[in-house]
Image (cartoon, rainbow over all chains, first blue to last red; front, side):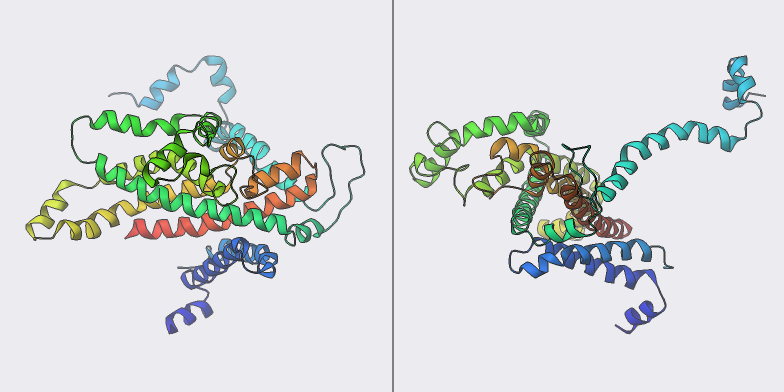
Length: 62
Length: 315
């Protein structure tokens, strides 16, 4: 856990990609879930933030 | 001394061409070759994408090209993301996507596992199993519509044979609860062979000596399956899921032919909804915004999936 946070603060690719992956997955689940409308409403912005973040952080150092 | 193949080929270059190329650097010549491809790529792929992004912020209607185009900001996105019909179509897409992938992976892997065993008529069975994916989706959709007919369709009779239910007591394409499953069944029937072929390539790439070594170590067949077969086929399987996932996210032709999105809008997948907005209601700006939402979703999913695939390959 400590390695994960130190990786985040040290701008390492692994932990940041993990964060972006979680955000994208969350956005996709929000887009397709059948339970609450507000989750659908905010799904696109969540996926977009995750995707842009993924593109940016994949250029970070390993 | 034998001549370098490049020099040998250069000797055959016509003098007129040689005169024109002389004086150009290798980099320039490389750009001359790659240039047309890059130009086509930009014109066919990148430009339409950028144009769609632009249109998604406007009220443009393709059937009224002379009307003044107004910038509407994020209004199209707001309307889509608060539209209950679009939300329903995303749920229908999710149902279709999840079940087709689960069924295709399970059945495809099982078929590959069986076909990989050496038996008489192996090649003939492979050809027969692969036949459905060679057919056109329009043809498949058309004849499955007949299969699903409650009075004359073979599907209802097969189900009634196994369950004892009356063949005309249920309607696969006309029932709200059965129609989403009917499209899942047809897509699974058509595309399981594709997953099977990819799994078969994975299974055939596993050298026999690994199994022999495991057998010498007295590993059971069950253990060999989970510790040798599954990990070594996993990258292939993930590739198949990636291909099928992207394809099924934008599934259109087969479902239009089978149900046309009905009954009601129970099988109206995102791509069908998008086509209706774009080419029946002619709301080009609105449908462009919808297309961008779908694109970002597929792109995001594909990015994390490719990362996972690379990790599995590195193992």
